[in-house]
Length: 274
Image 1 (cartoon, rainbow, N blue to C red):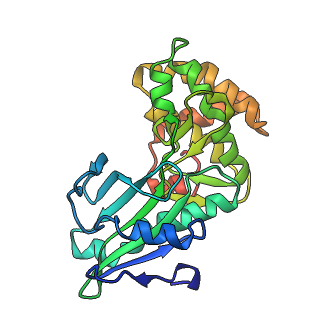
Image 2 (image 1 turned 180 degrees about the vertical axis):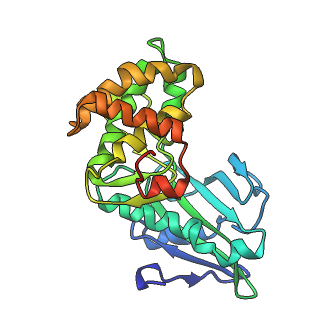
């Protein structure tokens, strides 16, 4: 493990280790250590609110004194089987490094305060991240689904985030409406992209990246909105991104990717549709 990811044990925590980022002062680190959830546990601790739950993943809203909002997100990966424990680096640790790389490429993402892991007999039984709570922001799905202008029109608010990733060479594998957050009071004033467990990084404006980002966004939108997105929304995306190919070719590529339904690996590697 690189020196920048060196972990320190948490006293009296029964195998818990942590790596704080530079965003936190000593007093705040001490306060957070006292309320850290167990990343190997599959149940939420008392007073934590479950935001999402799936097999080997638990996302919580927790109290975090010393942070600006007094809250934080704990994204935990309780690893239930031996294979997952041997491959623990693909979970929270991978997301931790992806967040760092996205930040280095000037993509607006939440602050990641800490990476933690729980070890049992030398194996990592669970890992997790403590992430900034985006106070006063709403995800684009919520905004678009409740917009008087209609979903496809409101979805244009997410275009700057997709263009920024394209310009930076950051291939977020799930860049969809649920993972793009906007200020609730003024959605036009910025964006923040969450959920970076699966991502790949390429040279800026890499071939086929914008097509992959567009196709995935459309595929994950409400089914009754896909046709509208393929029309006006895609035109706006192409124009704002200043794509080097004409719109007809770009549109055909996106349509081909929607039909191909490529694997995660293929999308990470920006493979063309066949």
